[in-house]
Length: 111
Image: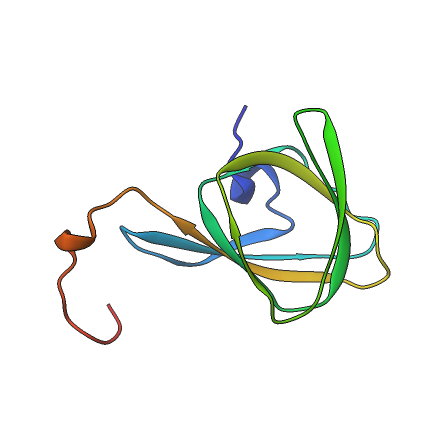
């Protein structure tokens, strides 16, 4: 089973940037929407809207409420989620890839 969220939940996730070090995903949904199980590597999540959702992994469920403009560290995980609120969810995920920071070019500016 393909657990890449861009493949398994193509209606909600899209790649907005990718290079050898990171992949940036945009996620959007509407109230009541539920994802299928998928996996994220270590990531930073930035909320672009305020929302409520239920997240489930390993038989455990948790309800969260997040405000717009938050940045949170997320360790690698497999889960599914459901928008349990009354507002759309809009977030960015900056997924980290394995890599050696010393291998970067050291130049400033866009790649």
